[in-house]
Length: 265
Image 1: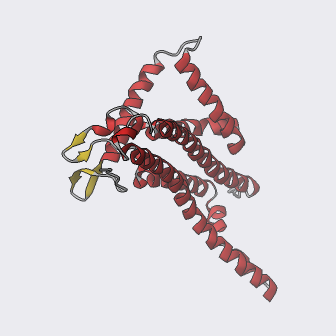
Image 2: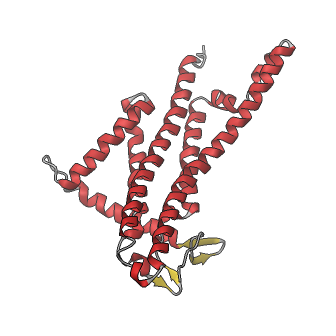
Image 3: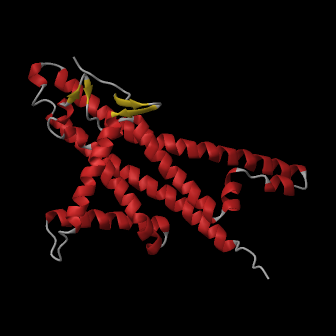
């Protein structure tokens, strides 16, 4: 019988807080990645090996995407650790279920591990953090400009005739639509990652569970398809996050440069 569950299984409940197998897997990945990072830091060489070469390639690729988005190399370097961490975490998380025997470990009747990105709560949390960070940074740099992008009340107050008032009212409604657009970014960013990873796991589980004859060889092409999809979705998530943060930050900085604060005598 195929066991497919949309919500993550609860491993532990502490008061109102539910600790799921998705949380446990995310924490496990974080610990393993931290240990690997500490080991890797002490083994960086002038002449790189295969692992170091792979990381250097990813680093150069990501920096090549960050510089145009942030329009400044120093600014891109400040956000590089955050976005590189997101890339590596999601990259590992997307492929976690492909590790042999991991999916067979049970605690009672509950699986101990679950691919974190196949849990909608996890992808929503990541997306909320990215979109929230973009808006908080823009608000901190140029609060009036950023708020004015969503609540366009000033043109209404400056309207002097019916035509100007109608145009200002339309701009006000468009500003409210921009608020909905920010919420849509969260849903789009999280739903795309969750949907592709969850669908890939379901596809492999269905093919494997059709009969004993399809349990081992038949799923192999779908495993490769799942790996490829996981890689693509990792870079899509990080590149979209880069664009969201970069465009919001650049717009706020340009507004601040165009309207500097008056000097106090």
